[in-house]
Length: 202
Image (tube, rainbow, N blue to C red; front, top):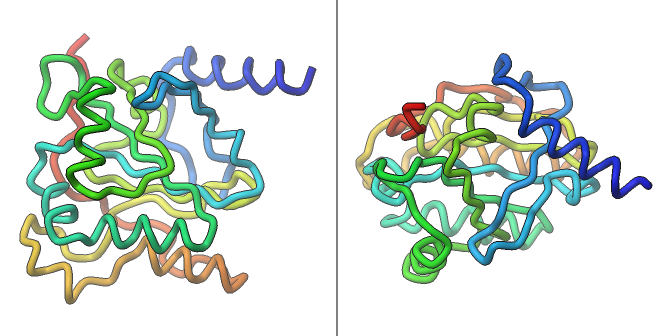
């Protein structure tokens, strides 16, 4: 019965009209999306674990900055070592920049040496709009209790230049470190930067 309720909650969020952006300090909206292999992944399945949500578009110069420099892969690997679940989400619509199917998503992960727990496909942009994801990348962190504790940019250097990674404060890694230490996230929100999410026009 509990599993049925969880599934219903996930579907309810996806079917609901687009609402205001989720609020840091409140429960993160639940969702269910197919991964690159077609398997369903539900956020609530990871209750009890910290979860990072990364909105991505492989063709975006700002996304390329963090992958060509190895910055995103290093963050994913560091998170995985601490038991953090990293979910990459692609909300680009068919025909729009960065849209990928399952095979293309798997190819990107392999070629980039990426380390997400799953690459999730959101071609209708429903989950992206529920989270009010505006850019690629746009980052969110959900704590073990299911509360949204960070929303914003990956760091404080809003440029597409890979050389800027070295001097940046990685807000995501800093927040994960604070959570691991049992501390409150000191920078809970920041301005996201990157390419606009390429949602469907309809």
